[in-house]
Length: 93
Image (cartoon, rainbow, N blue to C red; front, side):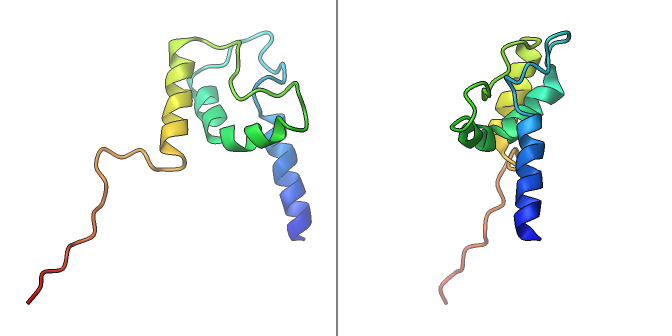
C-alpha cells in the first residue's frame, strides 16, 4: 500500500512540475510560483530522470511568479514567520 501511495504522489508531483509545457497558452502566476517553490526539491530529483522537467517555469508573469516561488522556497511548508518561537531558557538556582 505504501509503495502505491509513493508512486501516486510521485506521478502527481511530476504532472505539476514546471517545464512540462503546461503554460504554453497562459503564463504561470503567483500561486503557480508558490506551488513550484514547494515542489522544487522533488523536481530537482525528478530532473535526473526526465531532462524536460525544470525547477523554474520560464513562461511566467515575472515579478509575481518570482515572489511566490522564492517565498515557498524560503519558507518550505510553514517556515515563513516574522519571528521564531524560542524555547524558554532555564535559570540556575
